[in-house]
Image (tube, rainbow, N blue to C red; front, side):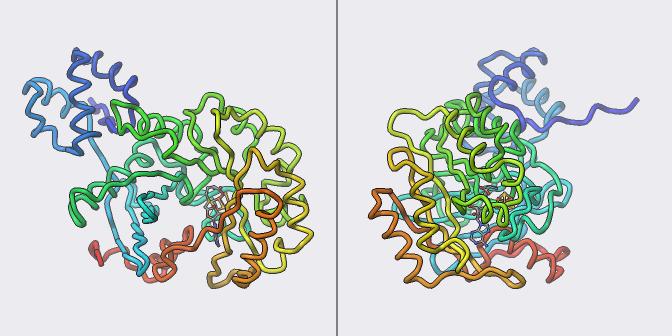
Length: 361
Ligand code: SAH
Ligand code: SF4
């Protein structure tokens, strides 16, 4: 008889884990202890879980694996950004980036291998969608990178924030991203605060309308233009869900008191950086409920778009600030290690480093 495939315990929320473990006859108390070892202590060796009975340890090992993404490559940029190329069980690779700023250490995580949305400015978009990440591959990026930082940088090097701004469209992989977010927030899980997590979306209208069921994290919308024709050129999704439909859906997002939606606006030379674009953007957004984050386009080989000059970028920011908006510029991090979305993975494949061993620099 074929043996049942083992389940990855890291795919379960606390509620699901309680259910699975109780089916095996384990008490709620043991489930709490297991979550504590895995998510609080970062210990993935059931043999070492000293406060569990040997019977429960064996039962766990017979039924579950604790499979995490593996660090295939790591690079440290001059500005402190760290980039990780991670290998999944089926040998697909994804990127996670750690960005240090002020008193924060933010992990930028991927939600898919590739992306189906196909934005014309995005390196990941050119690769198409390979597959969704499962729950444990989303949370696994946080667990693997946290472990690596603890072991290689120091015990007190702790991630404080998470942004879903790596490869993939998180709302296209709604269910796994929702479950992973639950684990990030859950007091029994990683216990991060709601304000420490930001989900960025290109504007999948049906899923935005479902955010009423999503844990209440910060929401960022990739806008990139306030004009339908320009936005459709940059983001094919705008041909299906144009600005009118997008903003109708945004109105349904439950916002807690004092929270605002962030609008990401990629600045591309002569395409969306003109006085007309400033007017269109300020007419579209209301000051009270929005924050604008300007992202200077990060050029890469083969891309037809250009980055505006620094003067132009700051001119755009000042125009929006003068109109009463909270507007910031996101400085590109880790340029010297190919930190923009999807570039490292491609470079790695080109160099044919598949069979070389893990290198950490
Ligand atoms: N798919 C989601 C999640 C993040 S996508 C979304 O589109 O919102 C990755 C992020 O990288 C987005 O904020 C996007 O604007 C940014 N990005 C992609 N290509 C870029 C480039 N060439 N230069 C600068 N930012 C880029
Ligand atoms: Fe996908 Fe976001 Fe890249 Fe667009 S910008 S292709 S939605 S990852």
